[in-house]
Amino acid sequence: MLSFTGCTYGLTEAESEELRIMRENTNHWKVKKINSTEQRMGGFCPLTPKEMGIFLESLGYPPITTIYIASGEIYGGEARLSELKSRFPNIISKEALATAEELEPFANHGSQTAALDYIISIESNVFVPSHSGNMARAVEGHRRFLGHRRTINPDRKGLVELFDKLESGKLKLGSSFSRLVQEMHKNRQGAPRKRYGPLPGIKGRARLRTEESFYENPFPECICRSKKAF
Image (cartoon, rainbow, N blue to C red; front, side, top):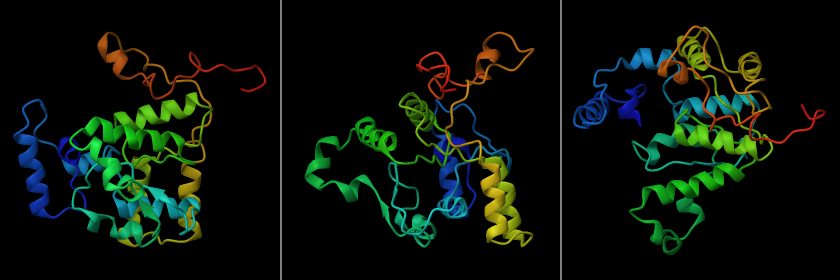
């Protein structure tokens, strides 16, 4: 995913080069040259584990919060999660919840192991995607269908601006920073809303690309509602 999106923020030069070569050698990935800085500033990159930790902390989640990592192999291994674990030590995964024998039938079946993550994401108290990929959008839509379960969709573009101000010293962690993050996300927590339509003045296939995915938000067509509910 990092290779495909061209997101290399926080990686070493060697890691960035490895991802570039992977992208170059994958024929069906048409876009080869990607400006990583532009991607990040545009909000198209996943939040790093460190950024996700700061984000959740700023939203008010306490250190005792249990966090399930719905992911395949993490690039850089467990060391990449160290700064998230420093804030939220109760990090778990399917490998921690299930025995090796229970997971053995799913070995070498990526779609099936992803399905395990999907089920847990659907049933979790809160779902917070670090990146708006196909699975994250499907989970969000499914949770809406099941009664608009709380799903916090990070404003990555806005958060990047805040994180960069932290790095430069223009902002500091604390109550003021938390208020900025909370205000930014008060309307991004899965509350009922109609699906965004296409942008005006655009025709043809391009019109479809500007419309919010039905799988991300099936409201109102596929969600029963009373006049009092909404």
